Amino acid sequence: MRFTPSSTGKRTARLAVRGTLLLVLSIAGAVVATFLGSSSFVALCTTVAVLILLSIIAQRFAPVIELSALRASPAPAMVGEKVSFTPIFTRDHSNWEVGLIPDPALVAIFDIWKGKSGFEIWLSNHGVFTLGTLTATRNDIFGFTKTRIRWQIAGEFVVYPEIFDVTLPPPPALHGGSTRRVTSSEDDAVLRPYVPGDEIRRVHWPATARQGELMVRSDASAESQRLDLIIDTAPLPEALGPGQPLISAAASLGCAALAQRWSVRVITADGAGMDSLPTFTHRDEFLNFVIRLSSSPRGDLARAVRAHGTANPTAAFFGSDRHSVQQAVFNLRHPVAISVFSPPGASSSRVKSSVPIIEFADMAGFVHEWSEIYGGGK
Image (cartoon, rainbow, N blue to C red; front, side, top):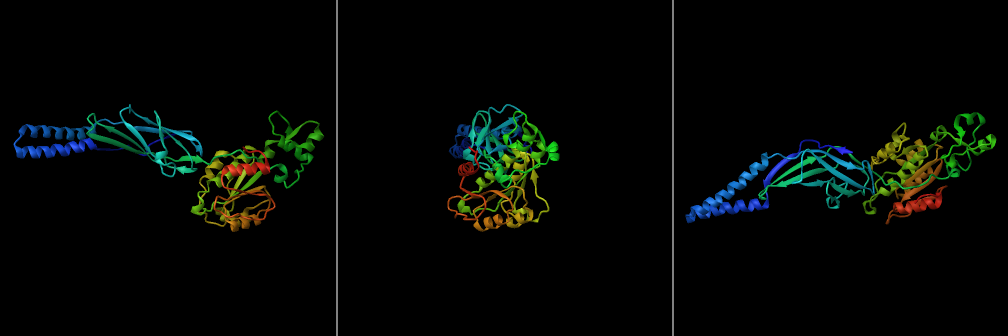
């Protein structure tokens, strides 16, 4: 993906340390030589000063490189990935020193590794970021003056949360302990013969027994299923650290549902005053929404759950505040999975629920606990 500069580069030319020292010394030497009557030394000092001033003028008007684009790969990226940024210039830039000053929220400047053709960084935060500023610096052949050009990079760089391999809760959890009955009239509309590659979970056993061959639910049947995903976006106390694992865990389950051709509806505190909530059928649209969730919700999560909760399978991801967890859980009509982000220093939620509650401090803990209860994961 290419990012273009927001405007023409801002060019500045100034004296380098060497040029500044020589200019000061030449002027001082010329003054002293004048008092001593040494015309030859005055001429030498004057010549050096003139050369330095001419080098500044030359740097101000000499042709310079222009940034065409900054190429990022991969983009969008994911937490934990290494991203390469390659600047593309309109002319040879071998005698220019190129630097990248990134958005501090994306990465610290000392975490950037510079390669032969660009820059590489390891991503640790998800969200939407600006890329910051690209610089190019050149000294003249004597090292007297320095020219610097700065380009502000336009556009948004998107970093998705790290997605882990988790499985949807098994059918007994998703369907309240029983298999949904399909009448014979419905069979023609939602069932089809098995073909290699179909998932075993989509086999419809009663229809298989009647037909004498494997029958599976069609795509229309799968697409009609929806997972309600409750995400608690309330900020955690600063002492407990960032809540990125909570978003990563919720996004992982949402992506697992989308991979099974389910739709995913997201319920947050901001949904309390909405008539309808965002529902997704595509992974990138879902992830783009999740990374933009506000950490300062304007509504009440329990009220949003009460207003929009349905009989659809519901997975909830909460922060460590016990009261908000209990209030929201109380309003769940069909919970299939409840997870609470509980980093070191947070008290246990101790909330009663009809399904197991997973408390986790990081994604490794979440994946382990999830796989212990629901299977799968790695």
